Figure 1 (cartoon, rainbow, N blue to C red):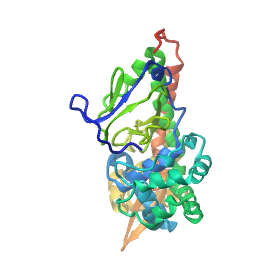
Figure 2 (figure 1 turned 180 degrees about the vertical axis):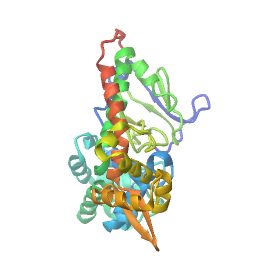
Figure 3 (figure 1 turned 135 degrees about the horizontal axis):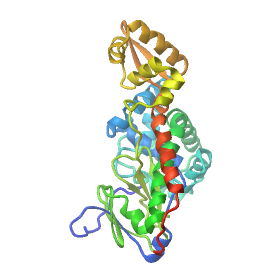
Figure 4 (figure 1 turned 30 degrees about the vertical axis):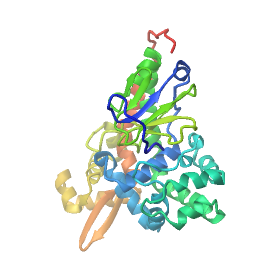
Amino acid sequence: MSRTGGTALVHGEAGVRIHFTRADLARTHLAHGADVMWEVINSLQALQGTYGRNALTGWRRAVRHALHHDGLARPVRQRLFPLAPDAAYYPDLLTPPEGTLGLNEAVEVILSTPRRRLRTEFALLAGHAGAGAWLVDLGMGRTAALRELGDLLHAYHRLSIAPIWSLIRACADSDLALRWQTLLDGGVDALLGGFHPMMRWQPPVLHVLSHPSDREIHLGGRGLTLIPSYFCRKHPVTIFDSALPQVVVYPMSHTPGPSHRGPGLERLLGETRAAVLRAVGGGGTTGKLAKRVGVSPTTISHHTAILRDAGLVITRREAATAVHTLTLLGLALLSSQEVSRARCTLLATAAQPTTRSTRTP
């Protein structure tokens, strides 16, 4: 995806500048939902970084535990991290358009990439930490390396993305419903203008202000696809190869954290157990959770045992102390309470009759 460049600055301003023609405006559209490969690749970068602490700390903790439990921590670190470093470049071939269809379809396309493209795109990773024989084997299109890549992508997805996929889709649907309403009311100009402050629309140029690259992208009539991403956090991301269909992947709104209380969780678990689950969202020992909730340590042990059996909580022993954290399922359950309400509100708003703009791009 878009990483580096050497073009001159426009008015002294760094970042990516995307140039539109009238044809491009007519062909600019929103994705229909979340893209699984963008989530896989962006999440690999997030797993290596520390940004998005409020939104991603619980996810990082749960994924690292799951990877260690399944013996995948080292393969992910040694194989997948070098392919998607927390840096300005990773290969475009890892995020094919088929990611909107599902993981199986996307991985099949990745593994069938022509060798010339494999060699070209993986060669640009040379010099990153972990680059070596693995990248050489992939660049040569060797069957064993490609098979291992496919297996690892499936395994990583199973542990990191699949448990919260419903949450990711709900967040994407909520974000897209709001942006569709903006498009219906004000046209493409309003849609592109609505991405401020992460992007600034100054017709006919869309400025991706915080992007680490410094380059120009001329769409040339191809249009642009706008894709929301749960794990895209620092800045919108673009395609590196200017000859490919162009996309901008932007950070979608995350849900409020576990401190946001709603009645749904209480009805499902009961008031005390729901409070314990929320308390576990911040992590802590049995004693700390007891103080946080205002109950006895015995009560905490009782409820965390039930939540652990339900797959919502992980408990690990540190000497004589029990430390409790959420699983991905527990994290998704907490977050989904607010997502569901936001999604219903936005979809209801989008369905209301409005006075639509008759402007054409």
